[in-house]
Image 1 (cartoon, rainbow, N blue to C red):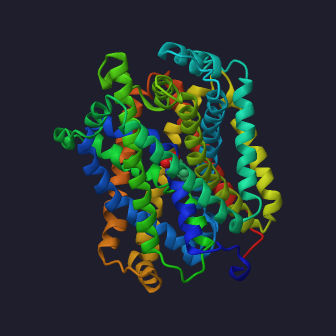
Image 2 (image 1 turned 180 degrees about the vertical axis):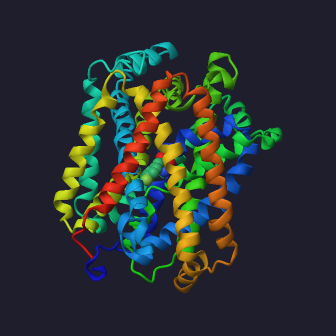
Amino acid sequence: MAEDRERWGSRSSFIFAAVGAAIGLGNVWRFPYITYQNGGGAFLIPYFIALITAGIPLMILEYAVGLKTQGAPPVALKKIWKKAEWIGWFAILIVFVLATYYATIMSWAVNYFYHSFTLAWGRTGPEINNFFNNILLGKSGSPGILGGIQWPVLAGLAITWILIYLALFKGVKTLGKIVYFTVGIPWLILIIMVIRGLTLPGAIDGLNFYLTPDFSVLLNPRVWLAAYGQIFFTLSLAMGTLIVYASYLPKDSDITANAFITSLANCGTSFFAGFAVFSTLGYLAQSMGVTVPEVTTSGLGLAFVTYPTAINLLPVASQLFGALFFLLLLTLGIDSAFSQVEPVVGSIADKWGFNKKWVLPSVCIFGFIVGIPFTTRGGFYWVDIVDHFIATYGLTLVGFLECIVIGYVFGASEIRGYINSVSDVRIGPWWDVFIKFITPIVLGVSFVMQLIKLIQRGYGAYPIWTAFTGIGLLIVLLILSFVFSKRKGGNP
Ligand code: PFF
């Protein structure tokens, strides 16, 4: 089977695809904001430690599994250990759910991009707030009220899924060319945004806010968990993406250098994006005569409310910068979005031997349909809730299980032997220690601590039943993983 497997056109195509999967919406907003929330400049210390102790070791592991087995996650994990196929399916189901709401966030960006030409989102902060919450999303006020579909959001969702289909339908070789653009364009835009941001009055206040360290936070376990969570999310670990991408490489490809390049490119981009974001926020604060923390709202609101407000205030070419910013989000996000779909398609094709020509459109149409509830007036809350359960619990669970299967059942030192036999940079026994002890302990502790917090307080300000729905969703995905793994495959 391996001989007729699809292949990347070159090593750099693979690296760009992996970097493109990693760099996404998570880098431009999540990273700077999480950094600020967790001690500013001091957060870079746990972030860097998380990268070294968990991010890079697990990335090496996932590349090795994909490369060695030449299969998508379910088949790959089955080859590692006969009983582990369900873990692969669990990762695939999780990444599928992730794709459905990630595409919804992309749809918001599609709408904003469209409106940026006329700056239709309004002039002032309150107007933009109203545009996002009431006009675009038509928020119902509670996750219990779905209300009707918001048609522009549905249209944006359809456009996103069509883009995903178009990027993937010609196969991995073409994908390997597309990623040069979906990585190159956002980098170019980011450079422009950083230069523009740094030359604005007040920029320095924003940067002070971003980079001034508060070392006392290093004693707070929440900060360390935030750092590990961000590393897993940003590197797209434990989602099957890296396994399937590596499986399209020839069997003797380098593993370790590729892992170092991908992870450092991603984290460097995050750090750089922080300059664009916070310099602009410094400008916004100065224009409004307030301090930087006062303009900084949480998470997604920042991208869709605060930043457009700052853009409106630009002395010249605000339309252009508005369009550029949302083009940045779209080009950053699209390669992450299709990197969430390819593992699903690859896994179904690998297990049952179906032709990807049919699997891909079926997955895209199904993904679009599953995403429709997110386009309703209650959809925003469900994006938030589902994201929390998928990204926090699902991801840590899969990462933990991968470490156990590789570290103990297959044997960390065995797979390290394989890694060293194909890689330029050799890794030592330290890697075994990470895979067998440090990474699973960190993930296990993080999982349990989050769960305790959830049981005590529910999630966010939502009613407690939403937390049970989230847990229920994960249990359904677990059951489905077992069902899929028990089905007979079409391939040996
Ligand atoms: N790493 C992406 C981001 O930071 O936006 C998100 C992501 C992409 C997660 C692909 C998982 C994945 F498989």
